[in-house]
Amino acid sequence: MTTMKTIDLDIKGMDCAQCARHVKQALENVPGVEEAEVLLTAEKAAVRLDTDLVSKTDLKRAVEKAGYTVPDQAGPKAESTTATLQADSSRPFFALLGIVFVVVLVIVIFGEGLGLLDVVNERVPWPLMLAVILLFGYPIFRNVIRASFSGRIIPHTLMTIGMLAAIAVGEWAAAVLVVFFMRLGDYTESFTTERARRAVKDLTALAPKKARVFRNGIEEEIPIAEVQVNDVAIVRPGEQIPADGQVIAGQATVDQARITGESMPVEVGMGDDVYAATIAQYGAIRINVTKVGRDTTFGRVIQLVEQAEANRADI
Image (cartoon, rainbow, N blue to C red; front, side):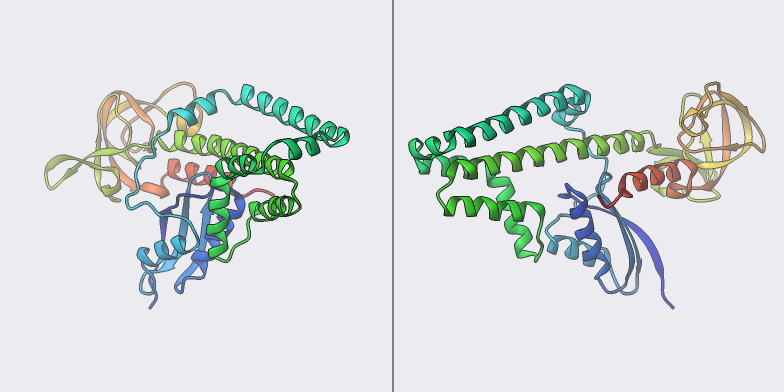
């Protein structure tokens, strides 16, 4: 008898849709894995597998063999200052990016027509241009080499071949321009991907982290992951409701805007349903937990957002 289970696996190093497809293929090639859904913006994979045939270590090995990494411990991902500043200044960034792109493109077109690139090739020593290529292209070349060892061809592979062809015929200025456009495209893709990831992270951050439950006649505070169906959860004024459930005692005014979008709090009492991540503003209640984790209404909202980010047109 097979034991099927779906587990979440954090994955680092994905920066494009093609990366996500490579990870998906690597995971689904592991014997015992039925299906893998890779979420680029959430930086994780939901893997349905037979626990008798495959372990998390097997999945980690497959991901690493494909050229990506699996963090040893899952946890909240800290937002870097750079990412936050980027997300907060997206419009000026894209305006500046467009200006830079147009300026460089105009220079290239007129430079080629007026023979300026030939002048650069003649007057600038090739070792200097080689140093510029290696300095600015190193992150890309590293990824291309890793992908090649994994038997993969990525978009940068083709552009790198083009750059090497330019070097082979002595067009060092053209090779520098190829590296420039590769880095520009790489940075733009990373920027837009990080913005999408931040939206998912901000939503996930709203989920409750701890719960106060009543077990064996004792009230104790536990991590949200340890809450089980049929636990009795205690919610006091100003606290988040840790899971979906039904009120069995008390009365409270609950802000359900995160789930229902209602601007006004609602009164809940005996027999009423309440939802994870909502806030009890006034009053205290006890609830019988009916759904936890990914099965809660809030958990399903997060899943829908992640899937919406992952399911995009092939173009």
